[in-house]
Length: 176
Image 1 (cartoon, rainbow, N blue to C red):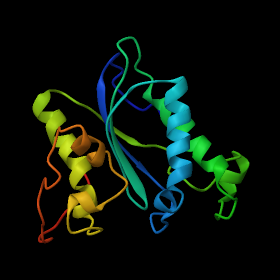
Image 2: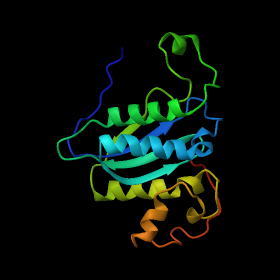
Image 3: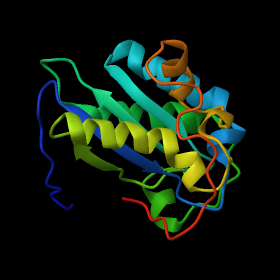
Image 4: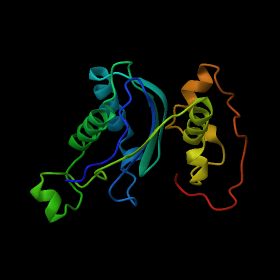
């Protein structure tokens, strides 16, 4: 098994990208209630601060601050993925390798994480969560995407409802 190099910083703030195995699927928004329940159940037993969360049809981004004595984000993601997968009917194609490992064919095995370095890095990743649905052409305004912590932050007065205004997509936009 590969030895992945990860920084383990108790109380660290992390940005994550988590993808479906089949990026053509829309399971995350089709089953948003199951995803919310899986996340809530996991964070109830393993709390952290959810600084930002945005769910798109085939992937999600999150910005979490872990408790001061905790660096275990991997278990949180494993549990979220597991709870979500168990809530869905078994309709996906499963490779022989996944069958042998008793895995579902819903999620990519790993996720991408980035340790936030400073306030500017935090702001960039928070804004990336807000803007992501617009970047992918899913909406014309950030406020039109329902599956985002952007709305929580608007209600809290952290960001205005018209943040980023209306934008027309031009240029090349790739994942980080």
